Length: 446
Image (tube, rainbow, N blue to C red; front, side, top):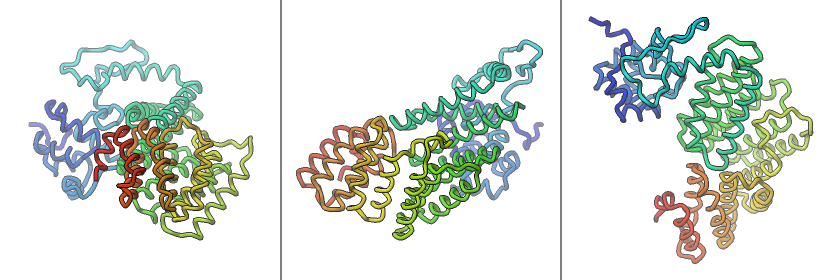
């Protein structure tokens, strides 16, 4: 009789059930554990032993009072319950490859026909083995540059179209690179891989943040921090903490936002060679946090510091690639937004308008955000015609990008229009809104 505490395969009908697939995809372990209990007869006490969790924690997860977010716990759950790594966005687990399919470098791979066909959505172990062989023989600095180039391309496409459609490819590449880290390599290559994995984890977190899926975003941001910490890249850790600070402002947690950006600044100051551009960006994130808290004096101080640091930028500064987006138009528009958050609309409006005229027109999401901020500051000053005209112009870039954050700014502006809904300019804006963004506008119907 099999030992119930030993990991055993879950029934194929459960692993191929659409509800189980979706629960794993979004890492909803409350549903996963319930399905495992009902469909596989593995009760919470067994789940706890297999996943190295306490029974009380499993009970809290099933009840929805706690969530599994740390990668080591998610990996233990995958291994303990024998859930294929691909279903949870993880690298293929070691137990998924039968011994007969393990590749010995001195021999040609011996591929045997498996008794049961693997799901079509999960690459076969023979493919994993061939990729591993190719990696062992060809990974070098050129490969690292190719990874970095792909990350830059992901960011460009994210700005233009949003990250929802990109996320599966980004997660797949992240898991592939994390898998490569398990092999011994030259320190320069290994450190480069850690940096690339950290950037991919941050990018994944960013796509979840942009989709307003905050728990998933935080999990990937945390993973990015851990990867960057392995190589003591304190500037990048500061970057990730700054992202988490921005997310906290969207979650209406301004105290958390301030604590996170303060930690980011501490990391950057302790790093060797932190550049003025990095420090300027972090000061502006600090200004956002203070503005959300309503701290006028501290917001203005942080804005002055951001501009002071920006003035010190030199042409030969060794800026990390991830901060090059923070150019002068971005500094100006963020300054305007910080004033706007404080309710200083008259100061904010000309700054945001100036930045919009100068910023890159291919950044559709950025233009949509900034246009809605401009419209809000105009409306705050009673400039209804201008505000509706600006917001109408923002609809075109907004319709080009899949972003829940853009939709959120749109909803905020639409709500601000409530007292003026019957005005001709407001009616014209709403008509254009429903024409360009019918799925969003349907949710905005009064």
